[in-house]
Length: 184
Image (cartoon, rainbow, N blue to C red; front, side):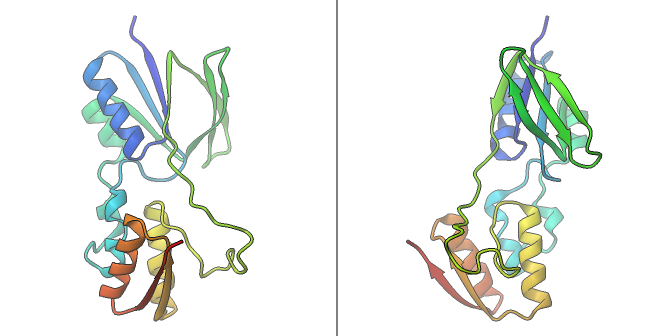
């Protein structure tokens, strides 16, 4: 009897795990849950949409759920959020974010790869304003670019000097914006 492997998170880590499971066991049932609209997108290339080097946001998406299914027999479920783990029963509770339906899925193996959440300190005044963003996924970068373009934003502050922060600053600069990079 083959194993049923559930993976929470469908971006780089989750997609890599799914591919590895498939290589190790062709008969395993593999289900990957992603609460957002995209699986397997290029995290590191997100900022390149800000300069126009990557023209379309969809070009950042490496593989759609139907490709996972057709080429690798991996069930990639977007807009599905795992809300609870029932360890004793070896089940997870999943909410379909499009329909609101909740369901349970059993597993033999469970892998958690939900990704990181940006630190957005509530103690900083204005952190929840409409012109404050975080860069985590394709949806985020689409919103940032649309806001900057639609509001003719000239001055940008990027907080965080890691790879993504530096590349975000660089690509805004390449786009002709005035950029300040802040690192703790």
